[in-house]
Amino acid sequence: MCLPLIARVVAVREDHAEVQLLEGEIVRASLAICPDVAVGQHVLVDRGLVMEVIAVDQVETMLAFYAELTDLWAEEDARSA
Image (cartoon, rainbow, N blue to C red; front, side):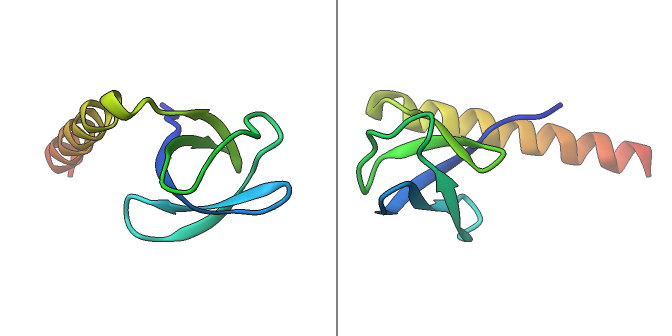
C-alpha cells in the first residue's frame, strides 16, 4: 500500500517547497500540482510532489490515523517475524 506523506511546509521557493516529514527530515517537493502553499501549512507529499494542502481542522485527525496505521503495521510485522 502506498500512502502520501504528511509534511509541514518550512520554506517556499519558486517551483518547490522544503517540507519537514513527520520523522523530522526536510526534503524538497515540487509545487507543479499545488503551487499555492504557505510556510506552516501541512501538505500531502507523494513521489516528490506536493499533492494537496491539508485543512487545519483535519491535521490532527490525519496524524492520528497515520500513527494508528504505523502501530498496526508494526504489530503485523511482529507477528510475521
